[in-house]
Structure formats: structure tokens, C-alpha cells
Length: 362
Length: 204
Image (cartoon, rainbow over all chains, first blue to last red; front, side):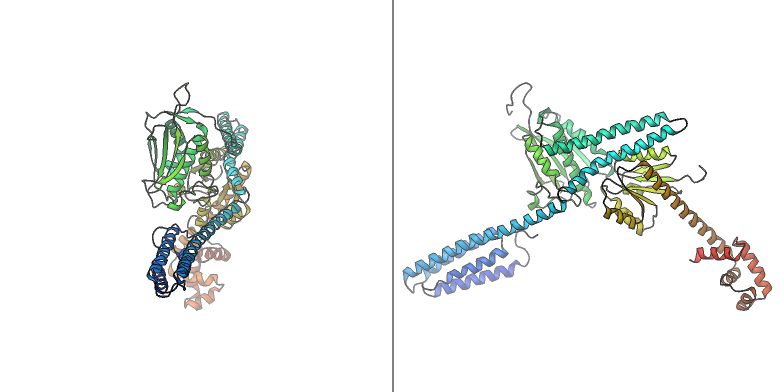
């Protein structure tokens, strides 16, 4: 998709600019040389219409102002014909230029919006009315269920041996219990998301939570040879929020970072998690930065849109949900380019009020 | 076990709990296994010289199981493979079977289904290994023949009589008989069909 937000001149722009300048010069010359009755300036409209196809909106506005200015200059330089006619014609030209500029820019924006909407629709259609979401959830649930059923088979077989291997059977049974509760946790989590439950907020230490979540992802991090650095100052104040929900956000950001780092083996495998107090001291910010593939500048705002993803098999809900959670907990979440040359996702949470007191914001 | 080569099952799944459960299930039926958290780990590990079967998860970070299966289909590693997946569809299972998977199971699968598939895989691999060993053996026998014996063997398997072989090679019938006797003994072939079968193996 070519968006009109690209920076600088694209290749192949130069001849177009030359054409526009030549057209403007010609119109200016004709407008100046001919008398007041001939409103050649109206033809600037054609130049503007062309320019909206080729240039960024801001450049089009500058160009339109230039055309307007030239129209007025032409008027002052022309000395033949009826002055009143000249005034009226110049007025008409200026209005035509302004209206054309306004309408054509609107049109371009509308076209871009249609394009975006269609793209999003395609994605949603591809998700086929939550089909893929269900598949994703099914995968999450089926994983522990597979472990449960397999362990149950093993357990039965250990008991059927002669003599029964009680110790092995017991261990299999323990695994069954653990995996069953893992499956039910997944379901609880999904239900929590679906019901949009309001968070249960309390004071907690963000650093400890980060360490717990990192512990859960440790296997994946080590397996993929990722260098993970944690900067979690001990003297940070406790934050106020729903610990379980924030844990999900951190987990999501961390897994995104791992995916981003793994997506291109040629890049460095580094992830940094940095906690810090914001400047005004009212919040704690957590940054998850990676050396992965990152995102383009114009994508920054779309990262949080539902069903928008850069991952091949993602469904584009992780960051949408993360934002909903962070905002429900009184924080903010945004994306930046990271110093590791990849993406950095940051969110803030308010600092917890001092024990037993009302939230003072300090 | 009656077989001196005890089989080994390789498990590649990124989920630790699934790996552990599979290892335990296999060990409960006295099957040895080794598990890996990723395709990369599996490829990097040394593989035992024993009949084997691979249990491969479809969806994993890094190399996906499906991609690895396709890679195996065109490459040098040829292990009978049982694919397992958390969410599969028909298209995916068709593709897996086309790429040579012997079974495609959707999690959670019945333990017996997995064991059946794994055992079938091991039998396939055992047969493949036996064939390969046999071929190796016949080739060694063939290489131990003298050039003259090889010439005789080539004509004999084409159905020529000793007399015809002698005429073809410009030798006496006695010489042909002697060479043929030696050749048959060295090739461990008692009858002409035995020899033809051995010949097929190395010249197929």
C-alpha cells in the first residue's frame, strides 16, 4: 500500500515536479500577459488536481497557496482590460483554487480511508467470525489437555504393570492435576477477556511480577539463545493495578519481543526490560525493548488496532487487549523505536497510594 | 524385548508438559524416547543407530513442524513421522500426509492412537533399516567377486546357459562352471532366483 505519508520525494518525482512548475509558469505568463477578462488563473486548478495525485497533502496546500499568490501577482501586473472584471475573475480563480484544493485533499483522504477499511475488513473476514480466535484458544487449551490425556494413559499403564509402578503412576497423576488446572486457567483468562471484567486493583511490586513472568518465558528465551537484560531498580515505589491482568500484558509484550527477535535470525537476539519512575514521579513505566524486526513509522499507531498484525500466524489482538487492560488500570501504553534497533513497547501504571491513605498522586 | 536393537522415539514439541507426558507414556510401554523443544535442537542432536520414529508438533516458534516435515521429505533424513497439533484442519492433515507423515493426530489424542502410530512408525523404520542393511551386505559380496566372476554373474542373471555364457565370453564351459560355482557361493545364493534378487537390490 502506498500511503501518502512517505517521507521526502519518492523516486520519479522530479519530472513530475518539473511538469507542475512548467504548467504554473505557463499559466502565470498567460494570466499576466492577457487582459483582466481572461481568467487563465482558473487553470491552476488542473495543476492542483495533478499535484494531489503525486504529492503529500502538506505540499499540495503549499502549492495551492503559491498558485493563489501568483494569481494575485498576475492581477497586479496586468494593466489591460476592465479593472472590475479583473477583480471578479481573480476572486473566482482564488475561490476555485481553494475549493479544489480542499475537495481533492478530502477525496484523497477518503480514498485512503476506504483502502484501510477494506484491508481491515479482509483481515476480519479472514478471521472468519472468530474462527481463528477460537482456533487459537483451542490450541491453548488442547496443549494441556493433550498432556492430561497422555499422562492418564501412562498412569493407567503404570498401574497395570505387574507389580504396579505406584511411584510413576503417582507422578503421572500429579501431572494430570497440574495440567488440568493449566487448562482451566486458560479458560478463566479467556472468560476474563470476554466479560471485560473491571480490574481488581491493589498495590504490588512491578519488578517482582516482571521476574515471575520472565521465569515463565525462561525456557523459550534460553532455547532461542536470546540475551535478556532486566533493569528493575529496587527502590521503585509499588504500583496500583490488577496484578494478574498486568502480568498478562507483560507476558504478551515479552512474547511479542521474542517473536520479533526470532523472526529474523540475522539480527541480534536481545531483549531489555526496563522499569523506571516517570519524570513527575506519579507513575512507573515499564519498557520492553527488542532488537527484532521492529515496525515502520506509520505503523506505530496501528499496532494497537484490533486484527492488525505483522505476524504471519497472529490474529492481531494481543496489543489491543494489552491496551484495554493498561487503560482500565489507569495507565498508558505506546510504541517507540528501541535503542536495540527494533521495537520498544512502553506502558505506565500509577504509583500506589501510601498504605491506608487515599490516592494522593505522589 | 526380542529385538536386540531397542527402538527410540524422538519427540519434538515446544510444550514441556506435553513432552514430559509423552516420554512417560512411551516409557510405560517400555519404549525409549528423547525429547527436544525445537526442530533446531533435534537437528543438532546426534541420532541413535536404531529403529526410530519421530513425533513432531505442527506449531512451534522458530522452525514449524510442517516446514521441517516438508524439508525432510526432500532431504536426507527419512524418519517415519507422526504429526501432532493443537488445532488442525483437513487441509493441514492432507498436506502432512502428502509430505510423508504416517499419522496426523489432533491434540488431545487418545494415548492408544499415538502408541499405535508410533509402533507402526518404528516397524516401518525397522523394515527400511533391514532393507538398507541387506543391500549393503549384497554390495559387499558383489565387491568381493573377481572381475571374471562378475562377468559370468551378469550373463547368468540374463538367463543365459553355461554354454552360451562360455561362447559370449570366449571361455571354455568348464571355466564358466567353476566361476559360476564360486560366484554363487560368494554371493550366498543357492538358486538362480536368489542371485537375481540380490542383483536387483544393487542394480535396481
